[in-house]
Length: 587
Image 1: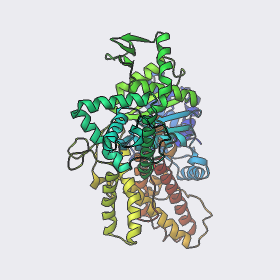
Image 2: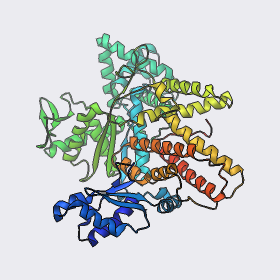
Image 3: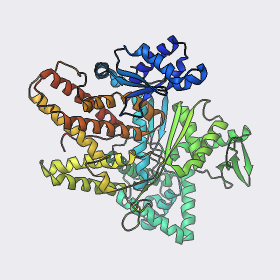
């Protein structure tokens, strides 16, 4: 289904050509002066230079041939050569009724469907999720959902950090704490236990203790490095402990990601890429892509168009060890083998930009990815406290994500308690849904690349550009529709032509849906959806306060209102679903 701008532009193209001008000047945009008109065409200004005519003469000519078209309520030429357009309410209501009947409210993808891998999550095994994991999970989930909505086969991968030094540290700390475990008996030859020798709580305490010990105890650090190497070389006892670590960690991580309403199709980790590394590096050397430099194996990635010097990508250290870049490249080898994606989207802190530049350029230079495959790094800014510094606990430590969620749930519950008309149990359940919306909307409403201040009081507010305000708007519409249904009236009519200004304002906001989805998809920008649903919510609330919907005596007029706000609710619900936000039935 074409957008209204496309439909208007089509008419302008016909008339520009009919008047002897190129259709390239027939571009129509949303008006930057909504007090004067709804849409505008400024093509006469540019055409004047080419056709040696005053712009107002061209504009007058165009308007004269278009003023009788039924799609316009008003079209006028304004000196020095602007064309101002106001849409006919009947044309607008017809368009909205078509949106209601059409799949995806008329949205159609402008390109062929693709297979896309979204690499987000990036948590480390054996460590709890903390606030630093919030943005990749929240933004990544939305980017994944937007890609799926436009029709792409989209695969989300958590890509766990599960193969580094932290494993050796845990193994050796466990040896010191529980030396009698069979894993540490060199003479043991039986099957290793299926039950892990630690709980998640113990595991989360073991790693930081081991990390601190390694900085003070050189012998312990050496042992941890040796155990890491043994694990990576296939040692049976180390592998058995590693499997326990992974099983316990994954169960806890899944629980915490579920609490964020974030899910992954793949639970792969760095370990899955290891088998591909030797052949990959050997091929790079054989192809002349990689060479030795100061004992390490590197790949030059610099290009003539670079504005600054970029260092080569190290794919193997002088001691033979692999690095993050090596693991990421080998992961791409595996993904190409299993999925042949047309596009990759990686989410990480924007400070990782150099790393991903090195990985992407090396992948293309070495022929790991096919020509034409898109590789995008979506770097995000930091979540800061009110002091402008990265968000910390009051004691100065890194806050666990589950504690952050709990804090914002409690802040929302306090707001709900101020006017509670439901049971405490329902209020607590609602607070969890609204609290998560407050947290996620507070993050997603910011452009991903920018830092933002985490302000729990502002995010939890039911007023302004916040998650609770958006959900409250949806709940308000649900309440009106429920009361209308209870009246037993049969709504056999569609949306009527707008009579009042706020009704038309709401209608004009709804027709932007397809353009917003396309823009959010192309730019990988969930914040554009946030901007849109805030606009729609404000437009609905303006209409609600100006219109007695349920008290309207004219049954057809009332039914038209109901059809309009039903479409509003459905569009808002679709948009919050793309943000991975849910809405309660009551607030």
